[in-house]
Structure formats: C-alpha cells, structure tokens
Image 1 (cartoon, helix red, strand yellow):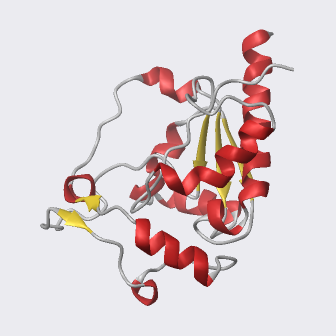
Image 2: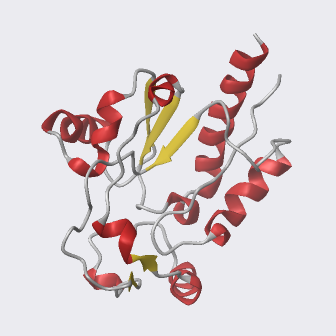
Length: 180
C-alpha cells in the first residue's frame, strides 16, 4: 500500500517541535512526513475567512496564561504544558488582523479531513452552517470527512498516537487514490 507524503503544520504559538511525537510515530509506521500533496488534515481548525482579530494592533501575540485561553487542555500533562510554554513562538500580529482570499478553486476538490478534538464534528458542522468565520472555508470544500477524536485542542500532546493513526489513514487513502 502506497501512502502520500505528509506535511504537519503547527498552529498558534507552536513550532515544528509540537509535532515531534506524531511525526516520529508516522515515520516509524513507514510514512514520509515532509510534504502533504494529495490530502489536507485540519486538526481542530479549518480554513478561515476574514480576520480573526481585526482590531489586534500588536506586532505579535505571545501565548497567554493557561487560565486566559479558551482552549480545552484535557489530557495534557503539567510537564507538557511547561514544555509548550517554554518553546512557544509568538503569533505574528498580521496573521490575526489580516485576511486571505482563496483564489485557486483546485483546493475545493483536495480530499480534506477535519479532526474534531475540542468540540464534536456535529458542533463544527453547525458552526459551518451558521457561517462562523474561523472555519468558513470548510463550507466551500467538496470532499471533506470529519473524524471525532475527543480530547484537548492540542491532540499532538494529549493523544499523539491516536492522531498519528488518523493522519496515517488519510495518507494511505490519498496514496491509494494517487496510485489508482
């Protein structure tokens, strides 16, 4: 069975280091974790439309204290939180106040998987139908699967092996499509 190469993209405050355990698990499973060409996996996110924080004026946004974040931290140990905090990378302010207009319609047919961790897929679908800007781009995609993996917003820490299994499955299916 052939699997497509994979690229893992970190979110706010994360560097490539956040994916170390997931990438190691995928590599141990024989997968190439360097470029995602035939499929997209959104982990507790999706393509947004419009600015996330249009009034944000700072140059960058550092990781806030845990009690100020509106994120589920279930399953993340104190040691993992400490390492996350130590290695966190400030988010560039322009990415918060700016917006992006998607112009390449080829993206609409790329097989996409949304891994729903901090909220179930039913809630994500409801938000899409209500037009929530932070995931509004999902409504346009024509080939989307949803996978529920209940845990924290950062499953690369709380459930890395399970997340790696979901990503590996997507990569294998993409490889089969490409080979077929």
